[in-house]
Length: 256
Image (cartoon, rainbow, N blue to C red; front, side, top):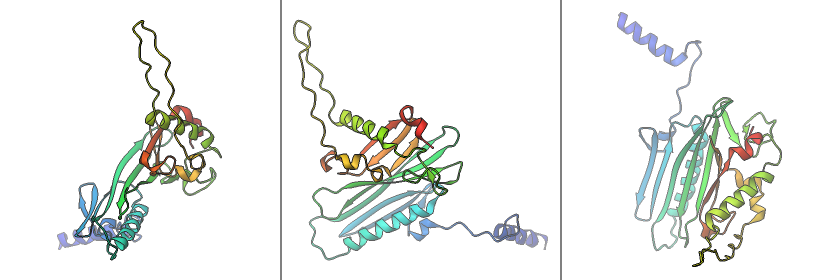
């Protein structure tokens, strides 16, 4: 009888917690998405003659609900197209893959997951997009780049009203350097360098470059903030999906 009593007490403690109040079991978002847990990730894979789905969702991120909602919404929209009778020459494909980031700079740390999303639904060049989720470890709430500094929920990334006056020129200069670096002047036989023509400025979409909505996908790291830009937003689609680290030394006083 004693062993039965102990088992009952353990079950009751799990159900009600130390305060005596009922405690709901954590929601199994992976099962809800019809995925399979593999260690620290949830894998969702579907394969049919007309389409394939390959999704990975990390399970260590503290706020699973918005991630599960994003994945469910993106997957279901893709399947609606993939299961249609639209003619196609190749199977449709959906890939959603995460990269995790952390920062530990005082006074509080952060945790982030950035999903790279690639969809091929019959276009000539499947676009690559990003979806980022950031978590404030001290305040225990998500971080947003577009909320007001005095907003109670979620936590703001910035403490200033217009951070893009500093951030956007850094992003532009870094992408210019990444994609069109200054040419190295060749040396002549006398040891003198010949004059070279600097590369032409890249065709930036300046409205997008200074639009706060363009900077919603980011990850806070110890060295600064990495911003992720969907393919075709700040530069033509031929440049691909882009990301830029804005160094902390340039923006530390503006980070909330």
